Each structure stands twice: as C-alpha cells, then as structure tokens.
Figure 1 (tube, rainbow, N blue to C red):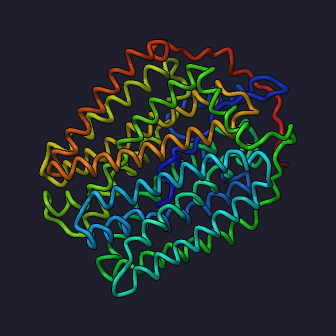
Figure 2: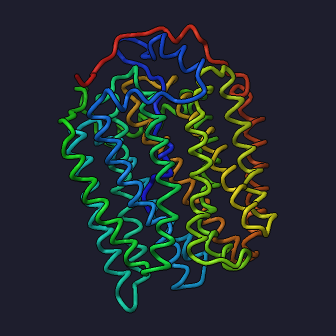
Figure 3: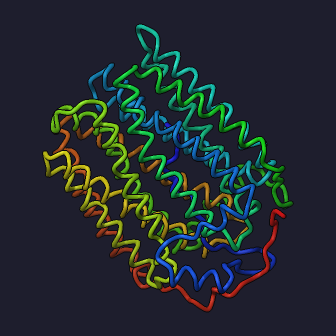
Amino acid sequence: MDSQHAPEVSAQETRDEGHDASHGPVREPADAASKSKSSLMMDFSLLRDNAAFRTIVIARTLSVFSLGMLTVAAPVQIQDMTGAPMQVGLAMALGGGGAFAGLMAGGVLADRLDRRKLILFARSVCGLGFTALAINGFVSSPSLSAMYVLALWDGFFSALGVTALLAATPFLVGRENLAAAGAFNMLTVRLGGIVSPAIGGIVIASYGVGWAYVAATVGTLITVTQLIRLPPMPPAKCATQHPLHALKEGIGYLFVNRLVGAVIAVGALVSLGAGVRILLPALAEDVYRVGPSAVGFMYSAAPLGATLAALTSGWLGGFARSGALLLASAAAAFIALGALGLTSDLFIAFAALAGFGYLSSIASLLQFTLVQRHTPDQLLGRVNGLWAAQAVTGDAFGALALGMLSRALPPSSAVLAFSCFALLSSGTMSIAFRFLRFHSVDRSEDAPAPVADRHP
C-alpha cells in the first residue's frame, strides 16, 4: 500500500540533471558525465563517501523490505476474504488516491518545512497504520472496511515522506551526485522488491497474514530510528504562496513545457501496467495452480527485471535520442505484459513479468532524466511530486481497470485485453508526441556549474 513503485516512484526516485534558478543549469561534472558514457555499470562510490547518504540507504532498505510484505499480504488477505479481484483492485485504487493527495501536499510542504521533520512524521504515522493492519489481520473476523481506510491512510502518509525525501536528496549529496544517488536508490528499492515479497509469501504461508503486517511494523520502527540521525534540512527561502497557488504553478508548468508534459503523460501510461499485480493471486490460483509461496515469487519478478535495468543503466547517460527510446521502451513493456496473458506456464509468466519490470524501469529512468533537464530549480519539488503522482495514480487506475476486466473475462484474457489497449495507446502517443521522438540531448549542456544548498 506504499508508493515504492513510484516511484517506484520509487521509481522511480532517480535524479539526473536539474536547473538552478540563480546559476542556470546544474549538471554533472564533465568527468562524471564521461564516466557515465563509458561505463555500463553504476558507480557505488557515493555510498562509501557520504555518511548521510548511507543512513538514507539503510533506512530505505529496511523500509522496502517491510513494505514488500504489504504488497503480498494485503492482496492475498482481501482475495481470501472476498474471492474477488475487483475488491483487491479497489483497495489498491484507494491507496493510489491517498498517495496522490500525499504527493500533492508533500510537494508544497517540502518547499516550506524542515524535510527531516516531515520525513520522520510521515514514516511514524505510517507505522501506526501498519500496526492497525496487524491487529486486523489477527482478529477472527477481519474488517474489509478497515483495510480500505488503512489503504487510504498509508498511501497518503507514505507519499508525504517520499516527496520530502526527494526534495532532501540534493541537500544531502550535492547536485553533481544526484545521478549516482538516484540510480543507487532505485537499485536498493528493486533488490528489496525482489526478496521481500518472496519472504512475505513464505511468512503468510507458514504463519499467517498477521505476522507479515507485524514484520512491516517492526521494520518501519527501525527505519525511523535510522532517519533520526539525519541533519536538519530546511528548505531554501522563497516567497510565501498560498498552497493551492503553489500547486497550480507546478501543474501549469506541465502545459507550458510540452516536453515535460509529454514525458509525464507517457510515464502515466506505462505506470498503468504495474496494476497487473492485483491479478497475480488469481492467476496463481486459476491458471498456474500454485500457492502463496509461488505468488510471492511472482511479485518478485518485475522488481528483478527492474534491478537489472538499474545495474546496467550506465549506457543511458550517453544515449542522445532519449525521447525516442522512452516511447520504444513503453511499447515494448506492454508487449512483455501481453505475453503474460498468453501463457499458462509459470516460468514463462515469470520471464514476462521480469521483462515488463526491466522495460518499465528503463522508461522511468528516461522520464526522470528528461524532467530534471527541463524543469527550473524553483519548481523541482512540485514537478517531482507530480511525476511521482502520475506513477502511483496510474498504478491505481491500472489496478482498478484490470479488476473490472476480471469481472467479465478470465484473468489471462483480462491481462491480454489490457495490454493490447495500452500498446495501441502508446502508438497513439508516439504519433501525437512527434517532437518527443526527435528530441536529442545537447551534450554541450554537460558543462559543470556551481552547486547550491549542498550539505557539507
């Protein structure tokens, strides 16, 4: 119920190049840029050299492992209670709605409040929600209504913390290190996404769903104890605006800059595919004839593909036609997802999900690179919130759409029909966003520039 897919967000939480309002474009130093072009693999030196970044990585790793339990526990419990994928989709949609509101609020608050306090507050309140889920998981007659309310609760507060963390990253690592920090954070999220759902499936099969929620609660508590070690992170001083006006300014930029608007639109389409996870329990039961342990491994397949994408993402920094590659990777992702609806073999299904994870993560990395290059510094917080919001809301709407399709079609047919529609939509976007297909990165922009608000 968290937004780790955001952004993945988490997706989804990569930073490449931005713009500083006072100094102009802020970019990687020339030697770092040349390294990214010549190396296939990512650079791990930032983890060694930056103590604050190590703290964030440890906390995020614990958080991802905790939340990975929920990605399996909540759908499995609701499916067991109702036998209806539509009800699973509704819970995911509520979580996505809460996350959208949290990202909008967080984008404004992260520009006004100490980001450390905002991160700690959001994670602590999430922990209370996980505790309530654990209690609900142990009672003899669990409440479906409580799960819907807690999906909304956890979606909102987890997204609030994600936005604050995105805004804090330049302060902690320096703008010249954003690309390395983003790639490493994505790798951490994806590795956790591979292992934790598998562990969650084993825990549920062996001890029951309640203990999966307990594990998420304990992991969140430990995460908060790590994040307390972060330094204060006050935002840069700026003119005070009404929150709605500030949000309106961020949304308006998507229409002013058609490239950024097109990139976020393509990202929203790709994020719809992540909603396929709500059908995995039904596919496992009806098509593959396997139990909860195998469901956990199915949930790990897409993060496995995404991990491979993060590990081998060095070549993306030297790819000039990033817009065309974004559109191509989006179309290929839906082809991979369509393969899931055509097979009754568990291993082929695992490969299809891994392929979707790889291609959608390549698209996510490209999206954020383009957004950061074409967004001024004073709008980065709000535009980052909007970028993350399209991911979580797209995921939620995809889950809801697949749940509705499953009421009229068998699970495999629902996945295939959904993938065909999404592939057709990606082709339409490729035609409509012709300027994106021909967008080429100007390598003269890679010159270094002064860095502002850098943590010593």
